[in-house]
Length: 371
Image (cartoon, rainbow, N blue to C red; front, side, top):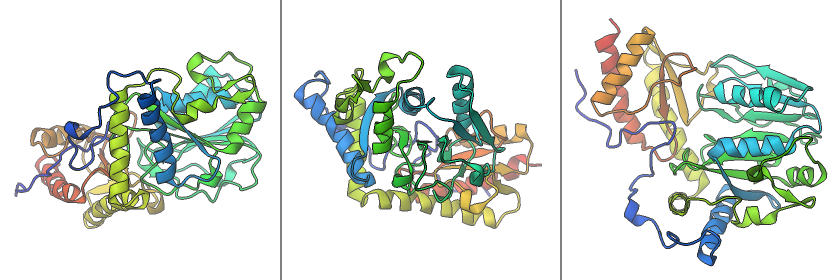
């Protein structure tokens, strides 16, 4: 039978992601709108974005947080163009975004001593083969494959190279071993349900040391430059952004950070995301026609949950359209490069009750179309 209950919030997009529960525009502190980002109130807001992020994430002493242009992509590119080239590079990819970083390293930066360590969608590459005396570039969570690294045990504590981690769909949803990560990037529009166009760049003291001791062989665009006269531009990590940010987006991000603090901090946000995954696991485990794309349970993402179904690719597309037309799930089709299936965002801003309400609709739609 057609389910009677619909999700209260049908937004399950993997980016931009659902706003926090109870979100309304009139709750934003818009005192900075119409003011320069270099004014005292502008710098204060941007500085708080950096400081509150560091506090909520529990970053180690000496780690720096900055707001940078062009979302997570800009933050990753900024790190690669500024830091790579001093030593060999291992780049890991098991889905489209990691593959994109590998392409940039080989074809744009044109580095010679590069090992590309890959795996197909649904699997992880051989983490034991990574040489931590090389610089290592990888995603923590494969947003388009639903496969995440389970931990940081494979990263050496006494590594000579830097670890550059694209963690855009992992920060605030998964425990990250910060001492093993030298560069971490993410965007506001993922786990916190913020707005796009801005990225966050987190640097360890080891990354800062590289920036101050190494000059790349290629010219750096202005928006990538983090040093002047051989020294880190500290202002970037105190709210003095390289280019003009949207202060409305900053206000939105601060609202999201305040919400995380109100619900109990990062651990509470992680628990909400894990509860969403658990609801899907219970559903999938009791049905033989739907499966996780991630082959290994310990590698399943608890944010971008990717599922395959025992139906044709065309039928899957029809299912996505059917659920959209019923206003029970928007934007849940698999990423264009991934195997046909569903991708459900399960970050902290999504209520478990909405996941539980959606799942019977997926079964109903499957029964309508599978035959």
